[in-house]
Length: 248
Image (cartoon, rainbow, N blue to C red; front, top):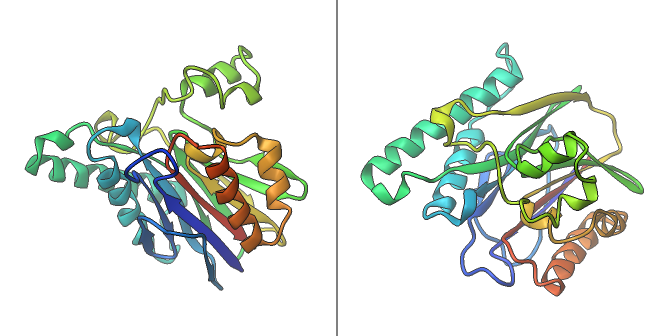
């Protein structure tokens, strides 16, 4: 199994408020897409500090630090464990804000997967996303907590309009918001190989049409990662850029 990942401020921002997690390690910035090999699954996630607030980078890293200790699946229900780790991350943010009042509004969106021999647990909070890629199509497995997702669910806009709608950045949930009672989406799907999973921050899925991402993901994983970065810089993506491609 291979993973390609990238997290960067992008062509128009001066700082990176995203971060990614792969097998217990939090990455806060990469110059180029990186490739790692893994054997036994694990936890992979993307976090995005909310709304450009001061401390967004701190919030994203706090969330992923909590998930870096996910550990070996045991008797605890996976959804309950995800909720517990989000609460722990929120509690850490409260502690950090106690030392710096400018951090009181920090929070983070989150999307990730927990992979074992039989199942893939998909979770998200906010508008980071998880997709499954079975060539040549992407299928969104996560469910955004956002104004545009709500409009799409109610039949007011098409899914393709979500990436360009004026309210696309209005989110309804984030880790660190709601006094720790975070609204979290979770689902479990069977582990079926071969398949690719694609995790990304909103800076990725808003920057490129779905059809362009599908075209790129048809390539081998290293080439796909390089092409994604090249495409987003060419488009002058207005937000931070973070993604993980998992080739299972």
